[in-house]
Length: 297
Image (cartoon, rainbow, N blue to C red; front, side):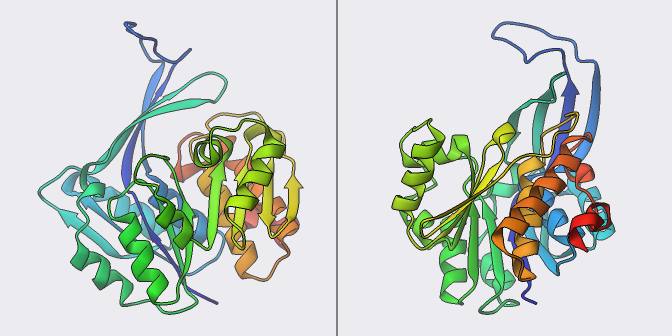
């Protein structure tokens, strides 16, 4: 079984429960405040680990983020590739979570944007051709990391979130897998909002790649070389959607790496995401594989 390296963000999430998202000029009193481990790197690495894979995380935190290592230990994630800096605070996110379970996020990158080239080289030494590299866009040097991993023959999985000027055509071209939601996909292909047109545009722009498109309440698709498979959501009472996409990514690829068919991978990931959104928090909401025993065997 290949190893999985998640080179990504590590955050402290401050989650405020509100009646509605704060508007311009408004002061709003929150119903509660909860502090959770988060960041797409942390979330995705925990999802892979809970799905039963051998997973490693690389990233950078400040002294204030040491408790994140305890969270990773508890999930079985190897964090030898994590560095602690005294020069910068851990990245954090201010998350508003409303009564419908939707969220909006203000992120501060902090130590996530202080990753040096020598750290990248040191981390990648431990991996080889056929291992998986999972990247998001919440750290610096993503394009450089992807390039170095590709040179080693690693399989590059990119979740281009958030989409901004650092998501270059070269970076997208270097990825073997793309995991995108409908908003990110529309930004990449030209702000198309019709899902059928979006699917066609993604396949045309990225021939030969594996693409997983998540569509919120409309489910998710697997796209590759003219194949389009769809999976509906499992309806649940939504509490917090923060880690839904990260959970989906981890469980889909876990199924894939075990040789499951794409449709089975979609179903597994959709079930795991449904459990995640029914719970508060990001990393703590991600389910264990045993909770999906009826479809994991």
